[in-house]
Length: 126
Image 1: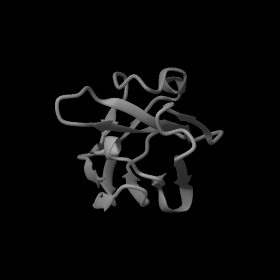
Image 2: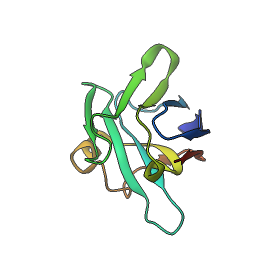
Image 3: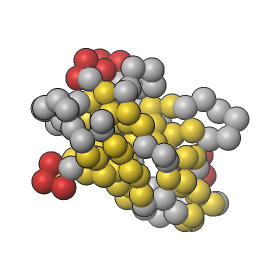
């Protein structure tokens, strides 16, 4: 059973940076599609970024491309999301998710991911 635990959320002013972490354990397969999603109050959960752990190919939503960077540290079994130039519209609960490799082709769709973390709150004030 894969377990995902997010951390790093905080309240910051616009323009600042944050780094989210997702500590993973209990891997069953050698490769996964791992992703960050976010959900703001009253809005649907949306894909932010994803990484295919085998090739380290990365994928981003247009709204964060150039500002956010997804990465992995295999030695620490940890997924990261470096968020720069934060905007008030980035305010949301951020979730880490893991699923089978084929999800990298439809990574922004939240269905299909087998495992989810509990979320970490990011609040950006103007």
